[in-house]
Length: 513
Image (cartoon, rainbow, N blue to C red; front, side, top):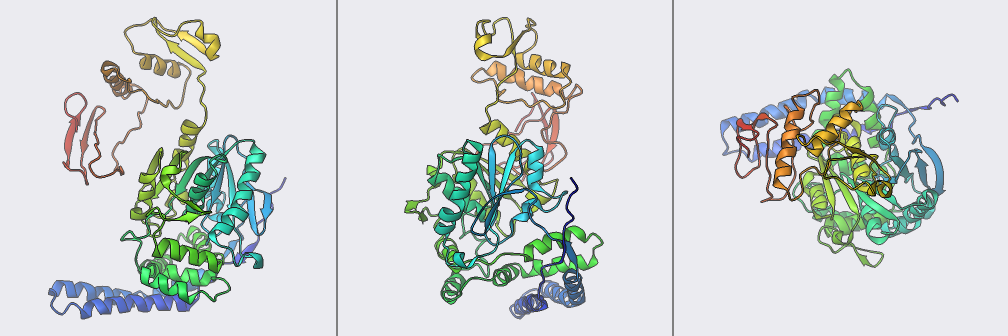
């Protein structure tokens, strides 16, 4: 069947007045700093004067970038999965993969197609090719009947029926995944309906709304209180109002991205993603005020004071396996806000990437797709062995039928079971070998021999994927222990450890840290 050609539309417009306002904020901010530098050093004054000059010099580029974007066209974007269920204005798309169903919930202020932007930038299609079974919830815009909806209304009258539909369709509980604020719906669902939810996934989901990096203008407690009072009479909160709040949140970054755009030759991806950022959805006033009162003003989720459906939301009550992805350079949901969620969840894997808010979804070098797929397969799928390698002291023959597995007895006592298993995989021309739980249990001699086996892999044709010639961010709590081991040699520098390393030479069996 021939693929239907997408309809071409004008990009979601950005009024020039918004950028003129943010430009004036840049100027005012720098002028205010200069006024307060009367007693500062000459170099510091000169630095701010140079910044002020740069802002003025870049103004023509800001207008050029803005006009270039506003005059652009894009293909109309709707999720490419099969539309299988609609309730109110909320739609459910299925990408027809295999295995455990995963429902993805986007933020309630942006359209869902960011998870399926195009053929080259589709997070959900990538997950499907990795053997997962994605579903996508699309909130769409408000209907008149939904303009009074609260968080609980969306949870009970929209999300729960969709979860129940998938469970009935798939005949099994689901994984629930939330992107950004969509993660809050995923968390609450996991606690309230554990019989329907098998595992929890959060991606760039804020949790501590009073962290230093989150509480910046306009997301301050004082302004949130004003907006709570100011918007009470609004019939709904327009997408333009919401977008204006985010422009003011990072006005320097907002202006600089259009200045860079004016200088760039690679414009297609920028236009598509910027169109999505401006192509938001209107928000019910009740939901908007719920967010202000419970999140920005009260920080109730983090303080374990958030009550939904007469239940206190407590991460300790979530017993399912969980996966928390955080971005180290996220300016929308900063790491100081998102990391506290992963640390507080039970049975949680924290995946950190050195990207911004969208990098985990849109950039191959930062994509969490492969790591997430591996987590789902290892933690939540029942993996049954096809072959068991046994030595002379191995499993008795009468267990072969019980385990329904092929037994291969290797009598070489000069190699370990791990060596034998790796050699067997090599003989079957395996492209990838994943080694799981091979630390030797309570046998120190087994642990040492298995580490030796991994060291020897490097000498063969295998590539042992640890960390080589690159920086790695490891997230943990203060006073956590960490060991750095070289296979076989490495020169390591660190930042953030109690005892730092600077070009420190490590060698397995001789010097570890």
